[in-house]
Image 1 (cartoon, one colour):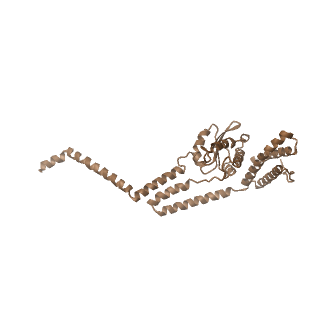
Image 2 (cartoon, rainbow, N blue to C red):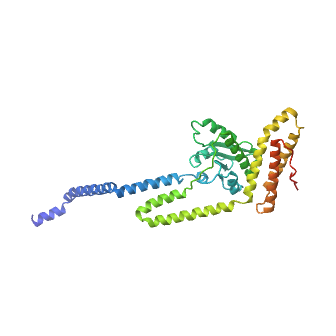
Image 3 (cartoon, one colour):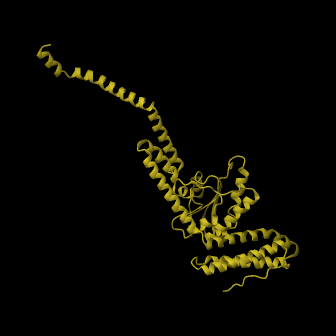
Length: 344
């Protein structure tokens, strides 16, 4: 080839353009082959498995949940911001029951709220309520096992019963929560909902599991060790906070809920005697006095200062005395001699 031919070849762009596509095609195919070859190796399969595990942990841990669902995933009570209610006290009242109470602002979409917490509160009885004038607007969703198949009737019954009697306490949401807890205990006693405590799985360990799986391939066991220590510190801090919340007020709330259950159990007997003998029997008079004292007790509880330990102990003794009177009524025995002396 002469020098002039080489110059013409260099100056002719068509020849270079015809050669370049084949080179680019070969480079793209080579990259695809390398990626496919990498994914076919044990290392590539391990990376894919870690990515799948991380995606499952993010999804099951509630990363896509709304604010209500994220809250009830680890607690049993939720109230919209701006509502005046002691959230910690409401959680203590519910305890470890398979019960979730969601208090929404007026005009909130209660049915949509039930859909939001469907997965986060699975296995529980959920009651969504909001204030509607002088009453509560409620929407129940019983997410007990088999609620959409063999236990559909029991779920419907639970949704009808769980909110009974709360309209009386529209200005006292904590008392309404106590009534809801008593209604739930009645459902358990009747076999409508399954017995047992709610098991709460915090979402953080699942995120830590995903992080440990991914970073274990990339950074090794050191990052996994640090993540485990962080999880331990968080679990210990959570345990300390729970222990600090266990005080005399929680015992008073539990005793008050038990007293309310005793009064509810006495109600059918009172109604039967009233229908037969009127309200002049000894049982009827003692029952009315007991319910009157119980209402006065609830009024005192509403204004009780948690920091006043003496007042808490005094009211606890009052509740125990009322409970003994209720038990004496149930057993057909005379009234005990330690009836409480109420002071104004």
